[in-house]
Image (cartoon, rainbow, N blue to C red):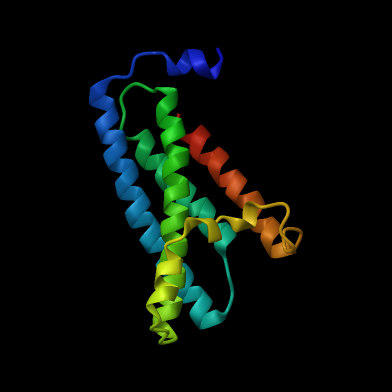
Length: 155
């Protein structure tokens, strides 16, 4: 059955609100927790494990969304991907905001630039100059694996 037919199936309202609540909760708490762990690893050891953090984040979100509904609908899997992307944004915001705070950077314009989500997803741009670097390819591959994992495991 194709995606459009599965999207037209009825959604149980009693399942939708818990999925939205769990997704928002996991995006905020998971993004903050994983972002602060990533900040700790980056600041103390100067080593980035973003690819590993993406897998942990996808697993946490998919598991919470899967436990929130009684009857599956394909919209819940799509929402799982949305919440994964939102959690990645919050994770990156926590990481760079924390790095600016630790390094005593107090320019309000830099903090406002942190809110721009395009800079956090620029690693997906194949036209950028650093797209074929090893670290960026790891991040792209594990971001794709994370989205697929969040979609499939939330079923």
